[in-house]
Image (cartoon, rainbow, N blue to C red; front, top):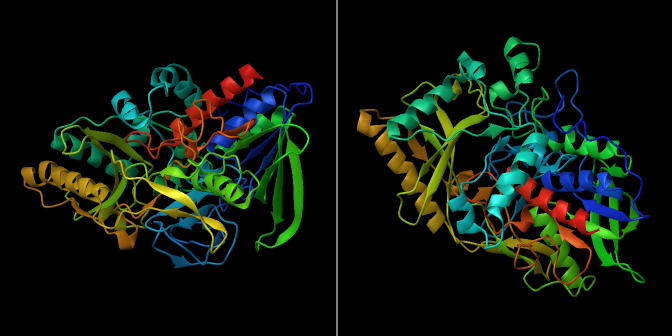
Length: 510
């Protein structure tokens, strides 16, 4: 049983109170469950479709056989945000938003970004969190209450020793040895993965997915603990929450005679045609459509006059979480013909010009025997580089503006650490391997991110409690709430923990 499935007690409607949630990723799933438990009659709009795990193991596309299921109404899809293979247009799970200066990738479907994330659930170090977040963001409270709650709900746990010892996981063991040659002990963390299903994969009882490094397009074995397997079913079991897939919200406006909001959505089909337009209203509105799409809805509402009182700071503070993606080739260690996933241990370096950096191993989902040729590392640095999400009057829509060209400070710091790591972990020990490659044109470097954050940043466009400045009863609970980064780690767990805290405070005051 996945963690959180016991949260199924139905609550009577709280004096007729109603809520709307837009989005079903980490933050939206938290909001849906906690509203349902508190007795709010809640409608959840999700633009994507449901993705139930099929018994034949063919729910999602794979890297070796990509198709439209991997892309949100796009003609191409790829392993990185900017390298594409032709596919049929379909409501797939990866939405690539092309910005001016950076591309940002988001999940679409019931489960949102949790369908596509790498299942990493690390807690940032306190010094890194506090360097990024404003004073008052409450790290100790998150560590004491909300990170543990989020990990329990996502059923997150460490990589088990028996799986790490399996021949498919030689790459994980090689990375551990490489980090130790560098002179560090890797920091291990938890993963939102059902390891019993991974054991079934290894024994042939379930479709090989995690053990092939296949996480970015979804996991066909069902081993990924995405929010459609914990938070969202628990929300529906309260009896107060209704999830509406294939509903694409396009307008938000205040209710005319009393507090609350009116939301309009297009019901779409598999060809992205509008089947009909629906209108809903509620006392409270929670935005969780992903950092770009949440901010886009607000930026467009402000520009078009439907929410004119929104703060002028809506749209500020968009960042890539300090991400710098690099591939290491000419490996001097055996990473396996196929690299078992999802990856392993983070190495921190606090003695770099410009501040601390971290690097983590991501298993690379290459078909045999190409796993021996290269592997992928995500480097994360502290960076003050921030863009914005702005209204484009020519297209009457929002766009990401990220004014940092190739060779920016983030790139330079990421490349510098990749080279230091190679020199200390490889060359110093007489090994030629581990040569890092990064190119913005190929989707490596900092040209694209799966971790776009900001736009409705706490202590700027919203309060510490997630309330959006300018309107009562309007809240943000997704990655747009973070200040462009979360502190040298993948952001999913921090987004979930922040949403849990926001919902605790909302429910306590209502």
